[in-house]
Length: 330
Image 1 (cartoon, rainbow, N blue to C red):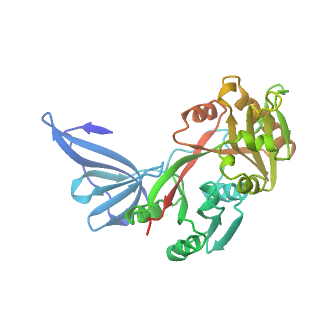
Image 2: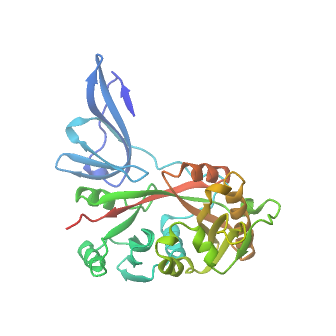
Image 3: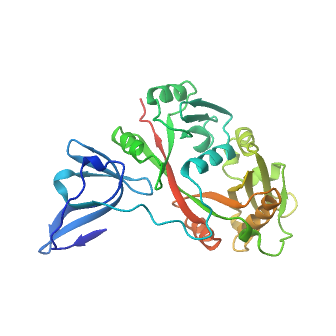
């Protein structure tokens, strides 16, 4: 956002505040007789050679010249979680998410889990933090190169214990960013608090029909089957269509202790606006409750506005964000 102000401003941050959440105002130009500023809110992830990096909650890193600063201050952490939303750390959710989407090949390297799955899905082909310490970047690059894959990190932002400083470091090295995604959490019971919907069939078997209705799985069905059937306890939901046709809608839920993780909720275009996504999640939630789960989580990409609106209505709140950083070619 841009602001036009004439008030006296003050810079109250230094390089010693790296790692803290800050609000920074910087000079971006002048016009119409008034000075123009831009405000940036996020984690001060680096301050080197007269350049600051501020990593926003969503994962974008903004670089600002120290000479352009006109105001800056440390600000409190993001507001407390909404009442009724499950409490969890980034580390807990990252571990649960990793178990719910297990790659065909995985190896621990310090506090990081390296995953490879023939290139099918970024989640199954990226390194994710599961413990303390920075990654051994050269070894990570070599591990992926040995498998004919680009080195890729899945990095969290927007919550305590996230990866903002590593985001800034990789950004400075030219690692490309993509796949901006929000992890959301919510109570499980309210999802199932509706009349049972006979259109939805829930089971533990991944059927050929379910695979055929998942556009991503069609790229590599064999690898997709290995990933999708992995996890502590996996439930598959589908809404049958006509004879010989793929299901009208499909969805997946992984139960892991108190958590039920929803993924791959997909409705065929010809069957939309019939409440099938909500019905799928309700029946999967009912089955997950029977298995002892009480909290729900899911992930939604930034560009999927329709899914985001649905999850808003179902009571899911943003917990943190993540995105991918991929090594430059060559």
